[in-house]
Image 1 (spheres, one colour):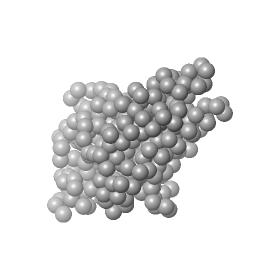
Image 2 (image 1 turned 45 degrees about the vertical axis):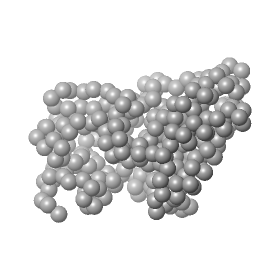
Image 3 (image 1 turned 120 degrees about the vertical axis):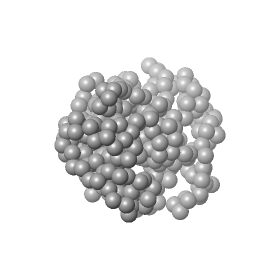
Image 4 (image 1 turned 90 degrees about the vertical axis):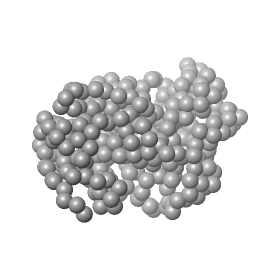
Length: 290
């Protein structure tokens, strides 16, 4: 392995200064659960590792109608936060299913999202919350980008080489709504999903028709995506079996399935509609019981 500089940083200014100096030759590491593997396997070539775990001001959750999550907030804190569980259940569920307890204690929301893996657990729930990501650079200051625009391709984002992701912003969600995350994985396996489906549902005043639905899927293409075609089909409709089948077909059409060591493409295609229907059913039951 080639020589790498290692810098343990304690402030945003110091981090941005190093990012400006190293640019694309630097890799940011907090918990390191993903970055260490990418570096050791040669998928990432870094001349400098910038360790940012001690930037404590970028860890934690703040409520402001919606929520602000610091990019260094770990999975365990997200999974156990009572306000996140109550208002953004899909995100809390996904964080609680992201590896084992030890991984959740150090893995961060920033690392999970900025890695832009096709099967990153937190991206689908963040997509259905219309999340935005906040970024800082020394040269240009701060900017905020919709997560849908931030994700460019598999393992590629809109983050510039001199930028650090600092926070995620989740807007307040509508009343008479509920959200959930369904993760399909091998039994007892602490790994990324074979298929993941996040869904947020809002019903009209009658409680019979869908006012709004947001659907996001991971593990069914080169990057997680919002299933906008399926959302359009369901909006304003009663969730009949026929309507759900039509939406499932639209999700399948939008997806690209592949074989790998964990599951076949045909298995993924078979379980995705079931996961979607189950997510819809869970959200309807949550709203009915509220």
